[in-house]
Length: 153
Image (cartoon, rainbow, N blue to C red):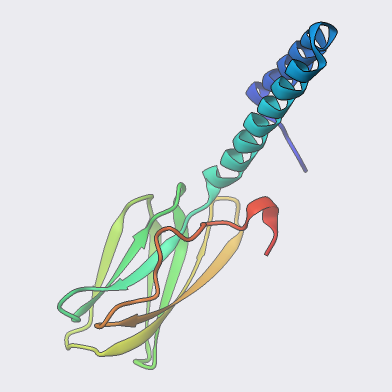
């Protein structure tokens, strides 16, 4: 179900009214104003989608003796479950707040491991991420988009 915030509705109505008024004066200026309002509206809708999305990231600590779990999203990550393959280690974190970091000590140094994380947001939607961790570097890219735009995969 799609529910628009009152601010988005106000922006939509004011954009249509302003475009209609300017259209009576100059059609080209009205087109420019319409494009600007559509771009602002799309930006607000995308930002509204990301307010309830957590993003759990797994990294290996520099000394290779612990796994760091961090929530780089905008909402709490609930029921975080981490599996370290092939070490056969599993652990759970009840709640991971935005920008919160949690470390899991391993006791010995590891060379390479794959961390599979599953977690939920506050709406109950579940997510899963997989990271190949190595002491030589990992595949985590902080500039990678957190969500596919317009819910496409």
